[in-house]
Image (cartoon, rainbow, N blue to C red; front, top):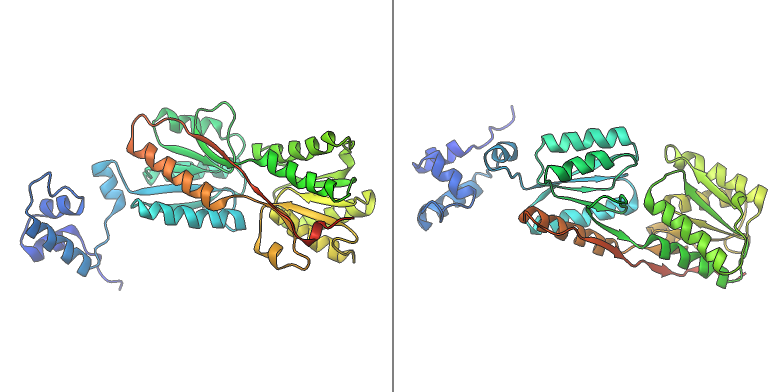
Length: 340
């Protein structure tokens, strides 16, 4: 049988004090309730010795606070979101908060179910990578005065805080770099997602072409459904390379970039002599690949830190202002985009 969980009543019994006294001490109210330092120390020492773990659900019912944050991302297994989650957890812990993770897989129905679950768990605040059609649910959270900060993408017209990278400028810089290296026939591999960050990257790609008098060719754009992208993308990219013979490819995400490398190798093509490539988002594989892959690196640490800081400020104030932050990304040039 599993060991019995230590309760406030167990601590009170061993010390010969009331459960109410123990509860006040463990909730940081000893000064407010005029409990002596000696008694408070004995409670905290014994709680630590017995490895007491508070029941956050029960405490939430009493205080309205559970010291937990709900983090909803698109895919926790994705390199970008996994890194985000790690930094968010580390930053939140400094404020005394734990983090509950969820992945939507870009599925609106699942996202709504996860929001409902986190509300039931009484999290104190939400960090959300919103799917399409989630405006109503997020608007409801705001109406209920629940602290919310969006990450990676935003919802136009909704008065909610967010922290994102400058997707338009990042994509523009990547395509501008390829143009500067002598490439003119540049393809773009993206997803069918209607999310703002993907739209902004697409617009950045088109604007860079337009500013250098390169005609936009729809046939050079490949849009892959999010569901099954990792299995379907290599084949689709191979077909694009065979039919349209682009000189260079720009990938809207790192996992599409990895799929691109796979497809290029299956065709027996060489990077960059057969095809130059660049990708949005950094990845360990891009650093280790030979040649290295040129990419747009988002400021992940800065994004995650700011998201937590803004959310904590909202959780601690009833009238915290809406903060909308766009951070610059960095173009990292490697061998995959060498001059034609």
